[in-house]
Amino acid sequence: MKIDKMKQLVVVEEEFQDISPDELKDELPEREPRFVVYSYKYIHDDGRISYPLCFIFSSPAGCKPEQQMMYAGSKTGLVLKAELTKVFEIRNTEELTEEWLKEKLSLFR
Image (cartoon, rainbow, N blue to C red; front, top):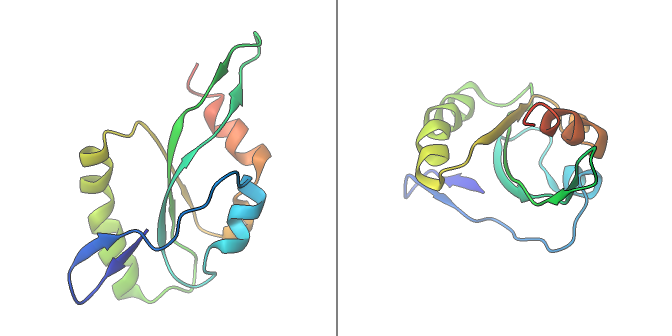
């Protein structure tokens, strides 16, 4: 999702089906912030499978300061409205890997 500056709204930019975190990172702009809501098939240590809904705020270094402020100011309201609990932030799109996501989700036992 991105922020439409003219309308001052968060809008869906693109939707993907069956995309891995590694493929998703290639779709994110390297110099613009984005909000991502991602459903991930997570296999727990005991073999259980869950599908947590993750909110990922991509705010790469090198973004325009006004963009960073606009996105940072919108993040909390969006997370609360969507009732998301697994909220993560990346500062470099290369951070978004399957290993990174598994590590973050392992903190939510």
